[in-house]
Length: 348
Image (cartoon, rainbow, N blue to C red; front, side, top):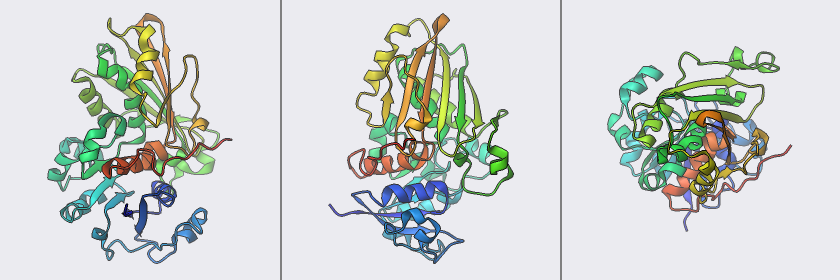
């Protein structure tokens, strides 16, 4: 099989270098173009010594490079970049996977409200697929444009999907998502809040009055449950670690959601999901068990009064971003789901 020609727009951030790490050893992919406005001409391995001897490309100027030579282009860029370039790529038959938010929200007005940008290609948005493979694999396979899910939404949606699909949740009580992420989730940029002396030895909530992932999660919860009455309380936190995400979900079950069946329900739902690990009853997933791997682990804890707690962990840069993007690429090109993603977690 001829290798897939891959372009990456925005190769200098954390999700960009994570794409490079995964795609450089992908058996079916050939890195073709890696762009950066500020680093054009610089060898990739000079910026990222971990890729010495593996990636021999230089960063290209995005204003001069021809991305239509690629079969697929990943956008590891700020919001707004992908939608500006997607139409011309689509016209040339190139597949697009955006790791930002340009194609996550089907409601353009909602996107503009949260991201303070006008959506410049709503026709493309209508055809874009929300790229959560465990939920929408068939749609991803047929898609030309993928909106790669946010990291927090991935944990919430995969943590709740079995209950939502079976209609087991009592929506008269809000779903509570208490989520915590490592500092790399803020991106590779200089900000006071992510300086070592600010984030180390510290734990803080943020976005409590409103986080951009909230409407994304809510839209998908409503879609999965076919119920507009869903209410969500979502509070993210910054924890003093580089990689890792842990989300604790609390929901109330209705009369149909029999607590004694929950473990079996989750195990059956994700039996064929290569990258979702339902842990044994009584186990507690830890972020270190998924570090560096495209794996999401979860555990189910029935509580009193028909409540249930679901604990979900993932690496925010892999299953929460770049690994999931590669997983989507695999589906789009009819490859094995785990092609290029057979990376074991790092421990310790």
